Image (tube, rainbow, N blue to C red; front, side, top):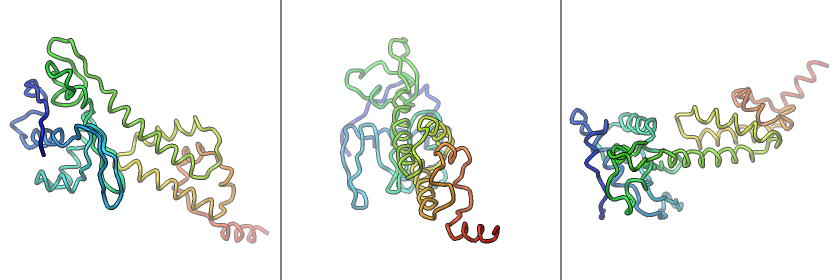
Length: 236
């Protein structure tokens, strides 16, 4: 690894900077150091993966080995950073993308001086003289992009395309409460929808996506066409 990053003295005033838990301070600096200064493509398990500026691809296992922490401690630390809008995680079946929030705001050449508390944490804040305000919009944009991508995956799973805005609003609401991989959760919904359509479940092909989401219908028993015929025979 070569090159350098900007580290403002105001980091000493940030809550992350602590001699009580110096390993967390070091872990945070390590994340900033490993963030890409320019976008690039890398190969993971035979597949090309795009890595954006301010982003890195490192799994919990990789971080656990690098920091000499348990995976549980790594997971709790990353969730704490995410909760404080310092990073955004995007987990896929290949690896984990970790984006440093507001990376450009405190690593860009044109603002080499003057960035205060947010430099340490990548969160909202301002300089000591109040001239520069660092926003959290970058993290929100990354998260919204992921949510929109996952919703389109759900929307095109095969259900009747009715009431898209209502379905999208409900999808966003459910997805925002998920702590695990959003991609994994969405893929499970897609598989469930396709299984129910393939089985010929009575009335499912006419169900609105918003109805599916509101009723959390993926939790229902999968009723096949044979089950329907047996039920009808019994009623006759």
